[in-house]
Image (cartoon, rainbow, N blue to C red; front, side, top):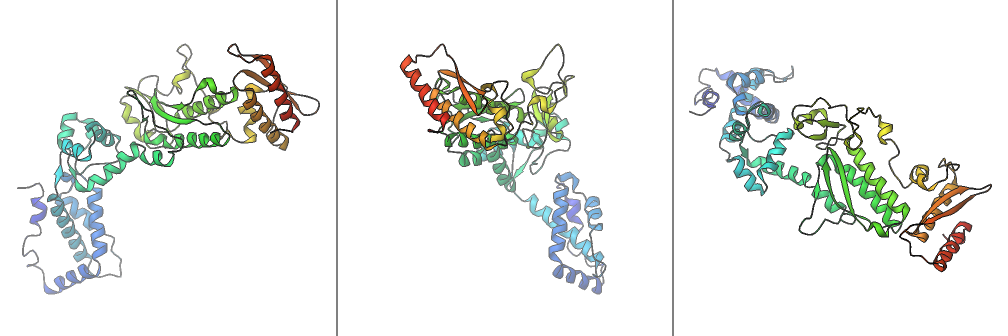
Length: 413
């Protein structure tokens, strides 16, 4: 005897024998004229009761009795019976579907078992069958209860593709150059942070338009925040380029502390069995929360002596969304500006200043520091002391100064 024999027994051969002819005629008419409505309501029951032991005769009857049936239609009792029959037929068909165990399903999809388990543990996707309250049951019992059907294959394949960032790798192939070699790393972070990485790569594209070529190489989650690594040679970058790149990485890291790494919704750092940035719906993934949960917001700036209570502004999360606009100059060029030089980002003159600064930065390369100062009219650039690693001779230095003078005069941009 199967689990659902009591459901099927209701509709044994001849179950209409005790009905009068008029009732039966209305029943058949309802089935013909309203088949789509009845089938949709029956399927809704199965979707709302995904676990087999929930699909009892009592549950099916209660569901059918709630059928929304317009007052101007005849045959409400017949429609309810049709719903119950439709549910039973769908259950009978489902029971005949091929199902796969946990190990069989992982092998079928060509992934490790832990990849499938994590998707289930997140809780957004359910397999064909799993015991109730599985997150509070012993793991062996949960694994034994798992069954997957053919209809689960595409759902899990799409989720695995999302977690592997496959669409991102195609869309950003121009600025994402995968790590190589025996110890190569990949994109080792949750799918909820893909949007942050896309913003990061959009800026790399903007850099490339300014002849500053940098590619994303790999990324990971560490202590609950996002860490991104690029393909570049720091020894060849100018002062401004190094500053921009480090600021761009730090912005991505701090943004990740506000976004759930699983779903991309607002979240915060959670401290339990491990650290992870999660929303309320996914916070169970770190297990029981520790006492310092909710106190430490940024693991890179934790002070054991005096627990931090940073605001968004103190975290630097509200300092603009791009580093390519003139109104962001005071933030971006802060290390290069004298204290007396205040920029509001609204004057066309500032756009000209930005272009000159970029040109000067390329001209002096990595060997010198520069500093903008304000004059009575316009601006001037002061070349600071050479770096200790500088090998620029006096002739080359004079050539750099001459080029800067051309840039500042507007004769060369």
